[in-house]
Length: 108
Image 1 (cartoon, rainbow, N blue to C red):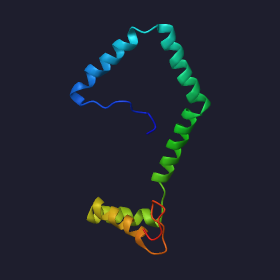
Image 2 (cartoon, rainbow, N blue to C red; image 1 turned 120 degrees about the horizontal axis):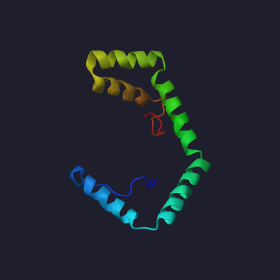
Image 3 (cartoon, rainbow, N blue to C red; image 1 turned 90 degrees about the horizontal axis):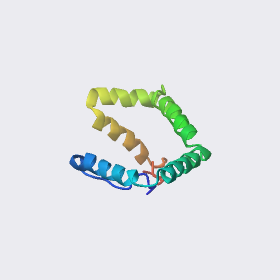
Image 4 (cartoon, helix red, strand yellow; image 1 turned 90 degrees about the vertical axis):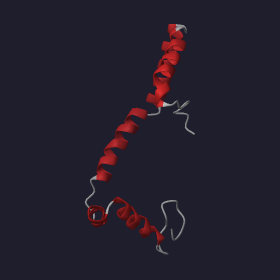
């Protein structure tokens, strides 16, 4: 939906497809290709893409290393009963009537 992927190919066809695309680019006007790439990079810079990705990684590390009672309980269940059980415990917490599910629906 975001346009980040414009085609998917089977692993066995990956190298051939990459070479086909490279050959297509290789016969294009080099200056035009360079300027197009520069335009894309400038747009990403203006949008702050690199900084956003860096901030996202920093925050993801913080989220993954939070030391909370819920995290301890999840890890205990995961070690004792397995990941599926821990995920079921987590998901069941959203089913309570006074909670909102991850999708925003009341009561799970």
